[in-house]
Image 1 (cartoon, rainbow, N blue to C red):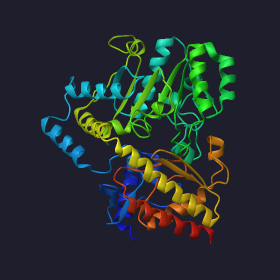
Image 2 (image 1 turned 120 degrees about the vertical axis):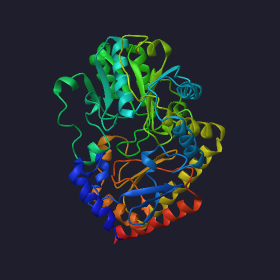
Image 3 (image 1 turned 120 degrees about the horizontal axis):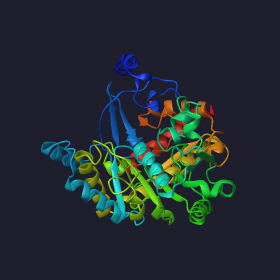
Length: 430
């Protein structure tokens, strides 16, 4: 495939942006190739500057559950843009959005809108510390909660891809109150609480880990987080930036029957525009300024364009529950097709899926945490990725990322993808 236009753009970009990108994984370094520059999307497909068409399983890393350029979402953005893009003042849209979320997620009684998932988790941590009067926070190895200093320790996603789970520029003083332990390991969590329990402000976790690939939670692990937070008076922060309205209309917490104290949101609630939010019980959220002493602000928080796009998306999801049924059915078809290809090719692969979140790991063991994810053969994934791209399938350019099925993917798209996977596996087995 010819990528002359993309290559020229990337050479120019590298002189103007670090690595030629505005987010590290886009550089395709772990794949060993230059990235195609995407110019448009429609439904389940994206198109690059060189005219190539792809079935897209990145979906802007999750937000586009309805697909690219969904007509009703585009129309809502256009209508709002004609009225004004930003006011720096309160709007009805913010009220409508927060009402939609509180109605869908029982644990959330009050919300503050922000502009990104990173901002949401950073603010949630600050709120937990302010509310409890404690400093220490527990996070889990391989879980990524954005690039705030205190949380960028043993992170997933790009940090795993580039082999730097810690980042330069993060001082020991900032991270000294962050305790890191293993995901899906209830016993290890018990030991942490035994040692520091009364100093722990919060436990922050992904209910389905999505930044070391897709890693489902073990129910005893979720229950132990809930139990220990209750026992020691720590807050339970559920990071649903990725899973919120993705695995279930009310998020993963409704799927698994847990009730956190604070929840963070992003991605889908913005309909594809920059967005974030954190919310929880009123008694906790009233600690946020101007009601309380925990300061947080944002010029573009709750901006009208993101609110309009997000509201339209959520209303469509709420009023059409068949969307989730079809997402489950088609994602299940893709999962079973991948597993069938695995058996025929004899290549060691682990396939994890929760709803429309899927990942295949090139390893012969079950992936349940960071250490098992790291057993994956990243070189083989890179070869697989390139083969799939040649067949017109756009996957995450990293072994340690989730890929997504959208409502725009058809049965024919799924079948074509399975056929391409079969050919890719046969190629890898040769």
